[in-house]
Length: 153
Image 1 (cartoon, rainbow, N blue to C red):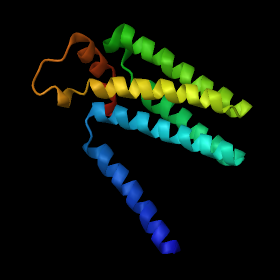
Image 2 (image 1 turned 90 degrees about the vertical axis):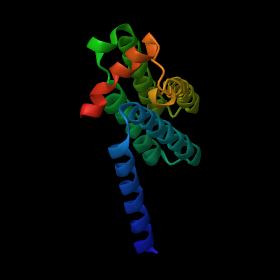
Image 3 (image 1 turned 180 degrees about the vertical axis):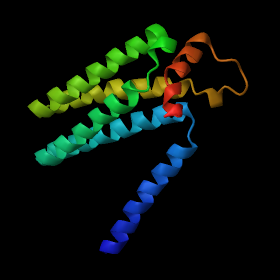
Image 4 (image 1 turned 90 degrees about the horizontal axis):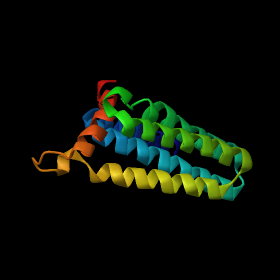
């Protein structure tokens, strides 16, 4: 049983590594949103179960994804006001997660989930690969530029 669990864990890590290696910068941002959302949902589960240490780890992981993934991927010089606004939203989300962790507050977790799901949906809706050769709208082009540094990392 232990060997099977380790094999599945290794497969999961390898699968994610493969997805990251082949993903466009745009898809990488969607994956970051998905990871943060998954971590927050896990935190809610652990909170409901009374498992405070695991809840804390899940929230810490979500904060790290937001701070070290989403925020650091912003190119404020190319993204202008859009990048600044996203930075402020990411900072707010990370702060709210910290507050939710300290207070064991599921409502705050739900608020951050709503924010991240909305941002993820908006980001997914401007996927350049779905434009089928059409020139992206100026806002789409600006949004895409804000995360181009992610693909360079």
